[in-house]
Length: 111
Length: 115
Image: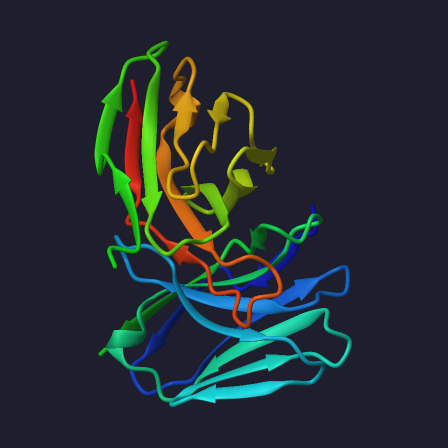
């Protein structure tokens, strides 16, 4: 199926530092979604991007969808300990009915 | 709404045993999926369904069977458990394509250990 690659695999920051995770696909995506999974929890939907070059913000989180719709990023400004978790991007599978997830970026924030 | 529910929360099996992981959703979603999550591997799609009576394979279907007799339920069967199937299993559901939003809702997961 269509694969989405995500980097970095891990990121350790001090509270207050910024954080960015990147998602790349070899093929054009019709849309991309981002999820957050807290330790011991289940993935929770954050946002969906559909348009080329789209930028959406949720408080300290900024999501971007590349002009070619092959890459995306999630940027967190001034991280807090509540941001700890694993962030996943997901694109449509070949069939379009299911989602293919990246391997995720695990964020650790130390006070 | 209860959302997506999964049972059991934890399970320990011996090699060769069979079992069924239950998944149900009360949001009338057409699409349902099963994923497994292993350290460093992210979420890998096992099987999915686009409606009652319709299922298809995902990335890692071997050793698993599914059926979808109703919109609400999507059980995952392990035919003969192997240690390689030790994992956390998530069921998910979402509205069909063409809906205004494609948010996927996940269940709380089943943590399976095969000895």
